[in-house]
Length: 413
Figure 1 (cartoon, rainbow, N blue to C red):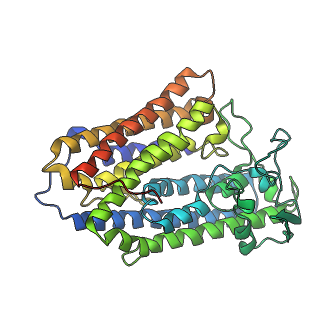
Figure 2 (cartoon, rainbow, N blue to C red; figure 1 turned 90 degrees about the vertical axis):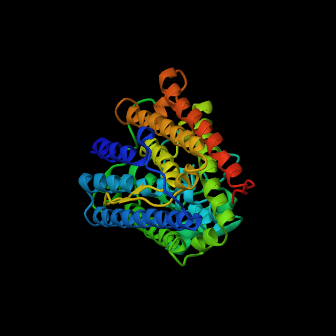
Figure 3 (tube, rainbow, N blue to C red; figure 1 turned 45 degrees about the vertical axis):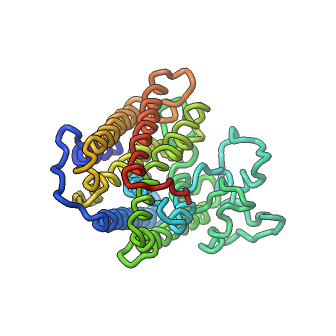
């Protein structure tokens, strides 16, 4: 099911998104304001899709909690995987404003110390000098000490879960967002050398057949985390609405707006993907560095990030209902006077998409991403390295847009 979903979606998205052999006809004249407006429109569509997908996930979680079964757990996991698609494509938009970037820390913070939330295997780290709460186990305990203050955690509430997010100033103490939910649905992935994801039993949410202890509290936590995810995504979507704070920031000034768009594409390509997310894990050969490590969905998340970058340049986006959106883009804006640069960027984006698709397909049915970045795996390492190198090359080309528009590099918020 997971592989079929992957193939159907990504085959269509790559064909639609960018094909350097049949570039669209150049527009006679493109208004930069139209480019900014369409960018905001696509960003809003992405966050609407992320929100609607999160609501479908929430419904599946309700069904799992009400009548726990393997089928209900599998459905919730599939809904989580689907929910990741639009959000990961939206990440290129989060560098536009501090508001969106701060919300992202509640929604998509990683890596996480899962022992802070729930039970972990005995092989889990025995000591952590950087995080004294690494095995605090919120679900199993009734009290926790944060910054020297004892907190009652016997009954979980949304306010309490919010308060514990980033406890003691440690970013790995994640209590909200996709990855807290991911861990609760899958449990730890202890099979990093075989093609298996986490395998939490559905009985961890069953009152009558309870495994792992504290099943009612675990179910309560899962529901709270899902509710908070929806709340945060609602704020993101509102900020990108026509009258939203982030849209107004983008539209305030043409040069500033274009600079923010370029910043999103270049920083997501280089600083985030080629650097923090992919290169670090590959160099360290560390499965703990993969973003969706409990579900083994990392390959799809990285591919979606890359699709989002290309979409920001071309102005094209495929919604979760298969509706295809297109409009004025940076590509349109430069094509008449800087045709060679437009072709160069489109070709670089295509190369990255092609190699990212190869990586994702390999991870889908040959070996999972955590296996691919293992030491002594030259084939898997090379596939990942190809994508990293592509991202670096596309960043170099995208940075040339600042010369075209006579812009200075914007700070990353």
